Length: 238
Image (cartoon, rainbow, N blue to C red; front, side):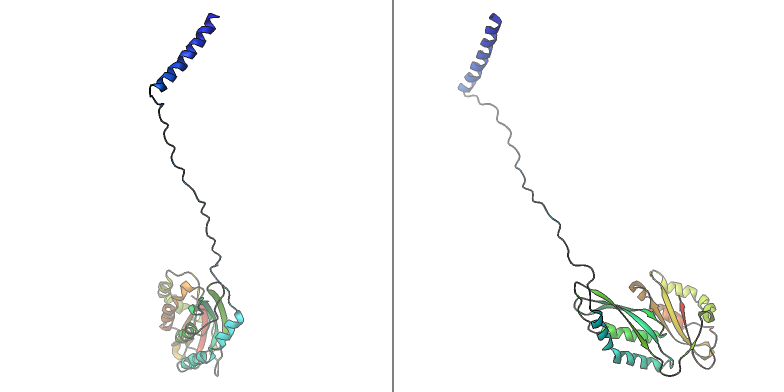
């Protein structure tokens, strides 16, 4: 019993001591203030609903191309003054901006065989107004023919000019340097093996910048066989 009494006495003395300290003006140590809580707002990513390419009515594009027929005819007539057998099929690739302007255009396919006439046709396309696309820029293609205005050129196989192309290989490779895509050339060869005209079609916009250089190399080619008294036409890969 004396041990329990002593323990209770010690507890009472501890409580009295604590009360005495408060009574004497001593305050318990202050607690460190808690840092303010930062309000966080969840940031949700903005959704872009606009796609890279929009759509355009193909029939409206066809009508817009047909409005250029008179300009296309003028381009061919100017070419015929230099190359009497000038004719061919063409396929345009066109990028139309949201405002209906042509952003760029090139010939995806062409066996026309005259770069000056090809540029004339492309200039007409670039200067025209086009139907406005929905949802962003749009792409369009259009195929057309410029028929022969009389007797057509004699068709040649590419083997006829293989040796001459081999000799011009380094110049051709230099023109193509840095471009992705494929190239196709067409030439008219006159009596004595003289190049009367040369054109180039490409498979991509990046390659389109190389067409002028390649056509220039082809137009200067030497050592071609003679077709006789009537011009020949030949199409080949580059």
